[in-house]
Amino acid sequence: RLIRLMEKHPERIHLVRYEDLVEQPEQICSSICAFLGISYDPEMLTYHEKEKKIFTSAEVKEELGDSERGKKKYSDLAQKIDNSRAYSWKKELSEKDMTICDILCGKNGKNFGYLPGTHPTVIKRLSVKLLSLPQKMRTNFEMLKNDIMYFMPIGWKMKRFKKYVRQMSSLKK
Image 1 (tube, rainbow, N blue to C red):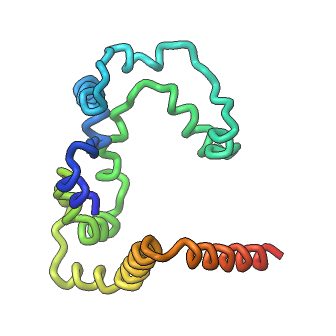
Image 2 (cartoon, one colour; image 1 turned 90 degrees about the vertical axis):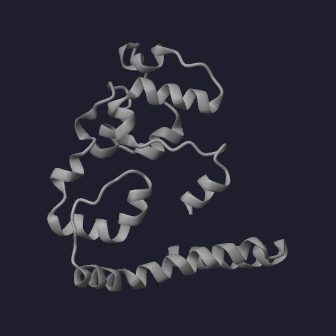
């Protein structure tokens, strides 16, 4: 879907790969600014040298929570861009996991400049695709349902929403 949107509306989508951002931050930030129609300032990349400000917004606290992972995620926001994790998936994924990723995401990965990490056999490809078929069918069904809902009259949508709210409230009891 993203590829089709990018082809249809190139002026509205600017793709940034994480690896490119951490390897060439000045060039990528400059291209983002050009895309947004604002001027680039090199100080944009020195944010980590400024006085550290604590996020106090209730939404941010709710999003990050008090978990260790949330605290780490928050603390990383004030750190300098670090490219040490850019290709960590190559070292941290097992051969089996990398094969599954290549099979399920390989075509899209190539569209975004990612080369396959493995070269699975036809039998392996077929077995992974068959195992992932139920999830893919559920996803496609949900997308189709959302597309259909878009064209339904508002009164019908409200009835469905009220029914959903009743179901959710009965589950909480």
